[in-house]
Length: 311
Image (spheres, rainbow, N blue to C red):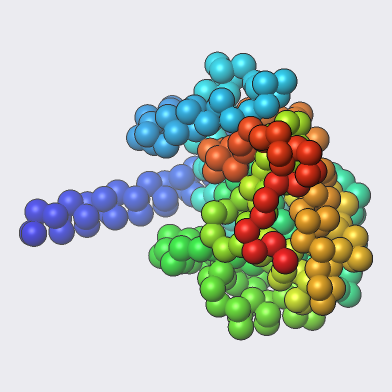
């Protein structure tokens, strides 16, 4: 018992020292030099996370054949690439600064000013795709104060990083089962970020390219319940530490409302997201790929696979 406590304390102390050293390096070094310096650390982290990366490689076969990226490129992105990208996670308070904010572009049908000035609440729906861990931080850095819905208890590290990400009065993370706080966060002109490829709650199967994609209906229902815009978005890392957030067209309001047309809304969302996936297939993460299955003939003829509690 004593040895276990000592090991735990040593790990915590090592993590804290590493956190402070990396943040110190961010303040002292040019971005290009910092990126170069952190590649060896990214390689070490990739080795530590080897089991998770094996799961990602196993999911490679889930791609539709025409979309499959080269195995070597997919392996490098899933291991070394994402490990390096996630260092940006450690200085969320620096992202609004000029030298960082220019490294993340917003692209799509909605402009930045529309997100800032819209009088309606917004629900952003994304997937575990690209460096998704950074999405909320980059949105907040661009002046879009989102709160992310999370299914697990909020860890001390996440709470610590959240305290560094402005604005302080908008929580970085909200528990997905705390509907009262979700209503409060979305109410008025609130913005929340929800991932649609989780395996909790009600699900719907959406066909595409001879396959079926399992999507959670929670984001659609929350948008309908709060009379919010429902906007799909994905983040990609085009080159090391150069990010692009792609926004799709909002779900038409006729699909939302008191009795939302969940099937039509889900089809719209997937249609808006798939061009980005098709362009950057190597950035598909394990959880996203786990939602894809070959579609049987019956569901292809129906145009939509069977859904669980979709209406």
